[in-house]
Amino acid sequence: MKYLIFFATAFAGVPMMALAAMVHPAVPGLLLSAMIFSTSWGASAGIRFVSMELYRGPDRGFEITITDLIALALVVWLLLTKLRSIKWIPPNSLWCLLFMTLACVSTAMAPVSIYGEFTLLKLARAYLVFWCVCNCILAGVDRRYVWLGFMAVAAYVTLLALEQKYLFGIYRIRGPFDHSNTVPMYLNMTLPLLMVWGVCDPRLGKVPALASMGAALGMVFCVLATQSRFGLVLSGACLAGAMGYANWRHRGSRTTLITAVMVMGVLVGGAMAASTVINRFKTAPKESEEAREEFNAAARMMLADKFFGVGLNNFSEVLSNEQRYREHIVVMKHEEQAGVAHHIYLLTAAEMGRIGLVVYLAVIFRFMWMALWGALTGRSVENGLLFGLFLGAAALHLVGLKEWALRITPPTYMFAVTSGLIAAWSLQNRAARRAKRRAPALRGELRHV
Image (cartoon, rainbow, N blue to C red; front, side, top):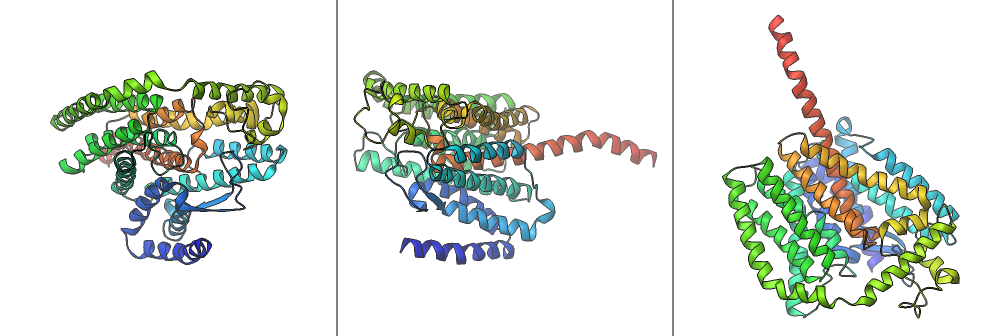
């Protein structure tokens, strides 16, 4: 039945969505909102072909999700109606292509190549989402639809967190995902964006602006309910950074009011949750940290042994079957199928080697630099939103020192969405600066005429 629904959606739903986007001008924006929202649905929003659920690597099948289908419909709409406005090679695409090429080489050299092929498909799908988001913004889709999509994400995950914590009594909520550690990584990417958005966008009325602040605080609650210590620290840093930027670049009565409301909310919420947070820091199990170090040590050994790595998405396979990488493991020694290194950079280096790690770092830090540079070169709404995206990207990549969850589909897609926004708004800001520089010269030419 699941396959029937999927193929019906793919072969009938995609053309219908594309046609609706061509007929009504509001539909592309609503589809973009839906695509952003669908990234929060986790495993329930997709289907896997050749599924290998017993494997412990990040990717366990050829996965297709609702997000992919909506993105495909939007791409069809762009190709049929917005051909002249399309940016065929968005910023940072060549580095993404180089990383994809290295991933293909790594897969060809892997002990079990099909595991790498699972990840290759995900990388291609993520790039499609990135390309789609970037070109939708450049084609004129209003940014309010982006805001609506992120608000839907915040509301959905917050409601799930409230249900899991207070109705089911779950100690560490996991939201819509398979593990609680995914929640902070996913939400912190957009938490500061919603904060800045509520302050710097005058097109949001007072109620939507306060709703944006409430959504951000809801995200903080979700992170708190996961009991993730590092995730909570990063959420606090994102809040402080977003409000600091807003008061620096967008001063005014609106900013002062929202800042006061946020400070009161944080103080009240912090006082209520203080005992829980302190207890979590004091009682966190040492075995968890020891297991991390064991897997990270294995990753370093693989990197030392193989310059080009052990193969994309093959860390778990190699660790499970090559005894020399398991000799030091104590905490998880009884597991027949080994897990994954809890360090995204060590994991990438172990699987793709030093060159793969360098290109991976180039991809992610180029997006961060684009966001930061764009944020500091003007005072427009998009400049402020770029700073929110920069804070989210910084939080994402800092938590990568403790987690590998960026390789899970929802955070991967959210990273693709935010990167698409960074690329599009950076291009728009660059065009605005050029037009501003040309304006005096044009006025001078008109005077002479």
